[in-house]
Length: 123
Image 1 (cartoon, rainbow, N blue to C red):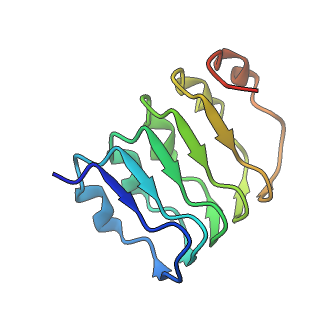
Image 2 (cartoon, helix red, strand yellow):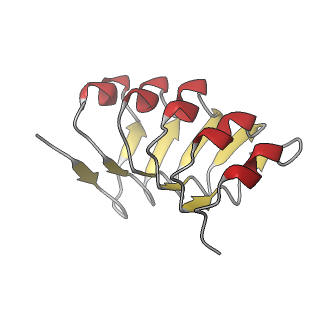
């Protein structure tokens, strides 16, 4: 069963299909530095990801609520997209998180207080 899907730094176009949620054994998803458009599908939250990277794409919209259910996630890189809205306090659920890259987006609001619970984050 497929555990890692990496197409970083290609010229992949289109949207991330919702059928990605059917890849139940996937733990690492690397789609960064492509030409993907649309939103991050809610189905990403159904996976058991330890790494999610969609940096430097033309993705937009708010982050799906299901994203905050990825309790085993260790690395997230969504920098360089056009995500908007606020960063949920549910980020405190990411207790295993070691790397977090949310830079170069359009987020607004305050920094979640529960970010302080993420004691595994590297500097």
